[in-house]
Length: 247
Image 1 (tube, rainbow, N blue to C red):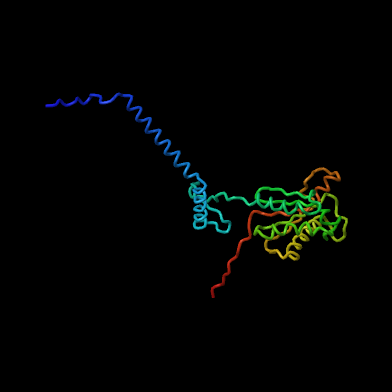
Image 2 (cartoon, rainbow, N blue to C red; image 1 turned 60 degrees about the vertical axis):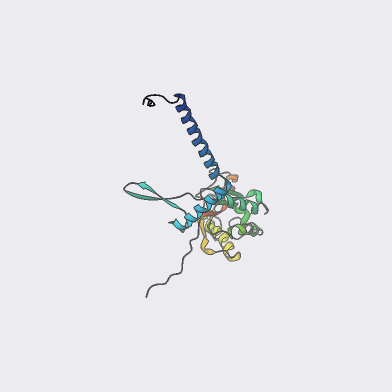
């Protein structure tokens, strides 16, 4: 009768156990690398983005802004935090600069990308005569160049008028408040009346000399402060659905 091996008898060298664990770990490591490389392929990324857009369209809570919202714990309840959405500001800036590069006095125009907005700064003497809100000859060419950009998006547009710190000398405008506001309104009327853009997207504001670019009182600083700013906001016009009152 064959003798039974003792329970504590070693059937393989001890180093085989460590070697087997090492090989198993290496196998898992390379399997994970392969899986990540597959998920990161262009095709997979495209499929993932398509899924995200589908989930966004179905589960978005704030449909007017088109932003996903995730639930995060906060205090005693639940806080709704809008997910970050891809900003359109860089593309708008690129298109605006491309259009304005072809107009006269393009070197005097400034296009700035600020927080969730695109700001187009135009010196006042490029558009208006001193103390007047009537547009100069040739000013329409600059504003017309912006129509292919502003007219193809749904973003709100705000026009701000600014003056220097010298008192208004025109009897039509008793102060710089009226002059700055009238200039902003002239630009808005051009887009709405002449270019037939949606009036509901536009607004006009006048700041007089209360928001200067330069704090100095030199002629150069005052000239920089006299300006009109066309601001393309990141927010878009909300569509109001038709409704009827119940009888």
